Image (cartoon, rainbow, N blue to C red):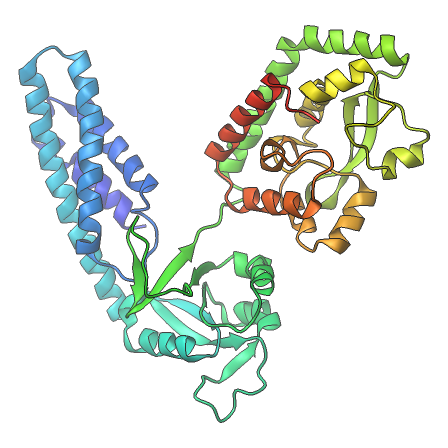
Length: 436
């Protein structure tokens, strides 16, 4: 909250005495802040150090200055103009570094004086968790106030070299709410990865900043800026927000993309409808109940590629590519994914999104949710016309566990750029006829 406005103000400060290049300086300031944000230089850290950040700051300042300098050189033929502009940018860069030093000293001072601090629960009761709690209590400059420890069970902690627990792992949401915690640190908790992942996805835990102590904590990643508490390496788990401005942009893109596609592809839609009618008669559109976001059912539209024996079979039969009821037109529509085009109307209505987990029928959702506990988690976001699992080859008769794993990976690593990549991969799949 403090660093970004100081960076922006420091970069613009030379305009107070030199306004000859004000447009270029403002552009360079915005590019610099964007480059800093993409490099994680505005992310929260436990160990705050100007010297740790200095190499990244210098590299990104040079990169931002180079981008704006190239644009300035294209717009202005005068070497003197570009040279004068770069001298102003050099002053701005020096002021940004000075501002960073001041903000870092200010943050450390505020933490040491305990003017700022966040309540933290440590998950684990072993030696690593104990040492982590001891360090945080001894060094307030890490900005965390330990309120207690939780572990899988409270049994067996008495009389051992372990911290007393305030609750068990299943009670962590209640502990967070009662103690008004904002941070969860996962240390040496004795449970399976699947159980830990389930806890990390709980709404109460997801609302907190989540930090983990890597199992190979002695080894730091070479990329980025390593973070640590004392000599214990920690990593912040970044999770995308599934609401807010970015998701609003995603919905706006859905509306524009679906509306424009329906208009531009109307001749293709007409041809598909006529071909389907010639092969199978009336009933060109196939309507089927599918499960959407938060488990809500909706009616999905497709071009009919084959006819089920009855409605019950339609809802409960698992169709495969070699089904004998598939005619030449239906087989072509499926291979090119043209049978999915009517779902553009589902996207326009808000039932679906362009990129997301593919929707499934209620019968199979119930069945798969029992067999694969992670399957139901894929309904945290709107279902999609295409998805990461599908462009990764998981279409048709492929393992449901793999699909669920890819869908949840998409959700937990979601970004607008990931959506763009999935769309590009989908186009490539359609061009080469990679449908089922």
